[in-house]
Length: 120
Image (cartoon, rainbow, N blue to C red):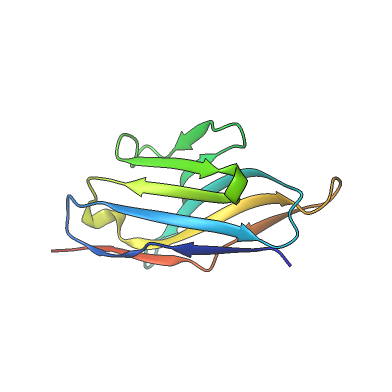
């Protein structure tokens, strides 16, 4: 059983920073793309950032220049550094990963989500 566990959410004032972490565990052969998505109340889940196994990143326009995704392949982990946070960044943040459990089998896995609230 493969799972993703997130941590690092919380309450922060506008302009502040947070760092989210997500670690994969279980029977893992290889992890391809990892990413972060978010869902605000009443909104659809949206892409925040993705990072592939080579370290190439892709960001939503709304977070470019403020958020940075990184990963540690040795730890099967992905991180999201969030700076200059705005109230509109308030959402539940979900980790996602495309995980190969064997050479021929892969799964797309979601974490349980972590709440980020930006408010004064």
